[in-house]
Length: 149
Image 1 (cartoon, helix red, strand yellow):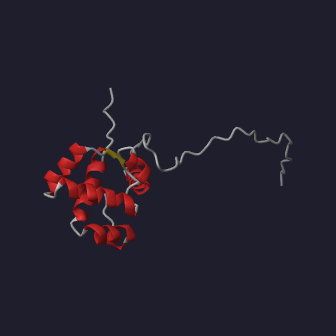
Image 2 (tube, rainbow, N blue to C red; image 1 turned 60 degrees about the horizontal axis):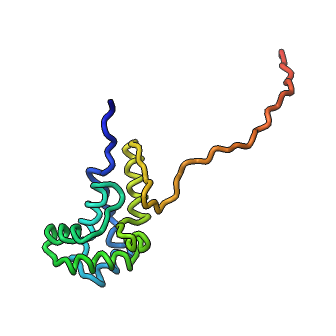
Image 3 (spheres, rainbow, N blue to C red; image 1 turned 180 degrees about the vertical axis):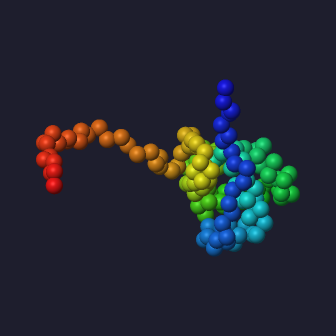
């Protein structure tokens, strides 16, 4: 009997160019520097459980408790993350918080650790599995002369 496959991560890399990203700068401009703590908590929460989370009032309350910011502010930051492109709008409309970038990073971390990963639900990135060709390859049956020289 095998061990259950771990879905979430214990840590994730935080790129040094984070503050150079235009989306991050827009988030700070519209919501203030404290929005970064909300977004960082969001990333930690997502990666702890996989590559997405469901957005609801309970999660908003939990974020409020952990950051000390009002639930209304948390909601504003999340909506701003959607508006600036840090989160996917279509998924947000379905109550899911994720993005292509989050899923790509999740996949890359699992590859680096040489662990299997599955991105089924709410997939935003393309599958990298190579299609198997059903075309037949001709095999030459001509004999090649062997030189004894």
